[in-house]
Image (cartoon, rainbow, N blue to C red; front, side, top):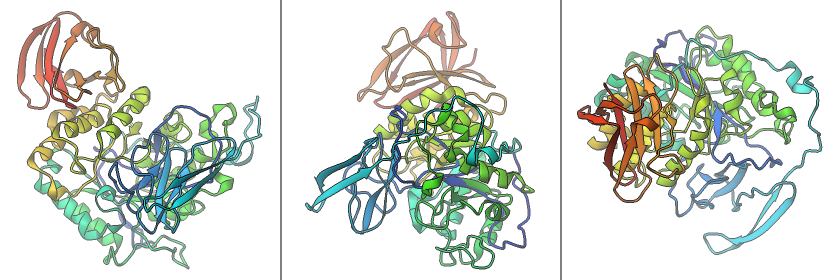
Length: 538
């Protein structure tokens, strides 16, 4: 799914338009619609970027077993369940994403290109099933001219607002914890946890509602999306008022297709109506249920992804919300389809770069490896979205959760917690409220993330183990232990970007304590799957 978000320094103000009594002051996430299978180039873009969440937002599911309702069940790089619980079908969305949606058969995604493919397997119940996938081959040759035709010729080119979204979002999204069972009470409980746990004190401010917040049909007269009264009995305006009164901002979700990932009314063709309703909201925009005429054929002519049908669907909503009285932070949930890191900053403020997250060490390392390739595209108002956090979910060790948080922070991905905050342990709260990492993540003077550097003492790994970056406080370096045992690492200062041979005073960012002075190198022992975070203070 997708999301749009506002930047930290921007005050969230505005009044609810009387013509739409449901919605007020939101962060908009826009998902990518599901589309028919299409022929894709075989670029290794497993779990790549996406602006305005153009993708399915799924419930986190265990690596083994069956996927729960609306969870991910397939796609390039996916290592989790490939079948769904009873009553749900594993349905193809794109090469990077398949989702468990209501149905009676079990399908498994095929990533075969340029031909129809069939295979036979067994379902969890032992029944033999046939998996069929048909792809479409584009016969359109690559154009030798830059002249645009068709949809691209009249597509809007409105850039995103620079008044919001300049820093990566810091907040909470209810999907990983609650999925379609989201309610107003759960949003308000998360807001209260922001206060009780000290999250508000370190800058958390967004409370984002994902899919399933609306009724299955638009209002027959106004054509607006209608909040589900069983989940939001007082309406969205009342909920937004309460969240704002507590000092926070609220965000909403929609989709750049005919329906959201969970089957509710999508935004394609209703951009102006929905933008008026979302005036002063934060929007996440997903990428499910895309009509065939809005799908792309590959290769994209001239590799002009900005003028692909996928990008244009997002551009249409971006142009619509640009006319609102209050700037909207726009998050593209597009799962890395059509290389959004190349064009996302022209349309929104952040873009998903992978399929949905899972509470597993393999997911954390996979997304780090993918994102490390595209960090040069990250700066103020332009952020690779590594998806919602899994701290508090699954069986991740404390050390793995530290690496999870540290990586999202030093790579400057949006950080949206995705769990029942009231159930977090004191150790987990200490991780997500670490002031030094949040200061690096939210630095208002340095927009670039930490970048990988090559160590002269350790062989290269995937993902990289060594990163360095600047902040207002100085130079930082980070060392990730990918090994399953405690390991000692020596950092040669001559290898660290921004340093060189010499004597430096170091500080542990996890504890805030001085480590002392070191000449030419620093050796640190790191627990399995943990990360050392160091600030050079002098």
